Image (cartoon, rainbow, N blue to C red):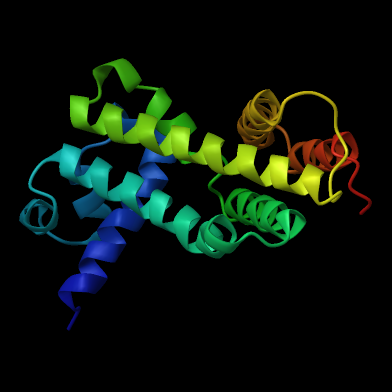
Length: 192
């Protein structure tokens, strides 16, 4: 017998797959329930409205980032290790078929998303930018990175490059993401 939390996790996993391949408006609860072999009512039980499902997905992505970065944000530490962890997570996502990043997936239908989902997605994006900006600033102060310019725009450039590389890797090959990661390392003066 499947536990309730297992069903919820399966729903979220399938929804994440569909979100990344079709966008928020490109799938229905039926697409989830038929794939999992459950009734639509099971999906509605866990997520009464599709906005609830979207918010749960964004919260999961935010929590993943917080779990991976909380110690660094609170106490400092190696910025290089933080960046490597972020790159490894991104690469692992792509290698497991999740080439579209969550922010990119939500951006497809952004203007049509419920207001709360738009706000939560924007907050997550801003948190990610803030985190990466801090990683770059600390890394430069600790002489782990060597780059010119302000860390904020550099963080935006890195995030945009990764998002674009993930989308291109979906069409062409995962080597594109690997090449972009190597170039980011070079641009930051990281010896690999």
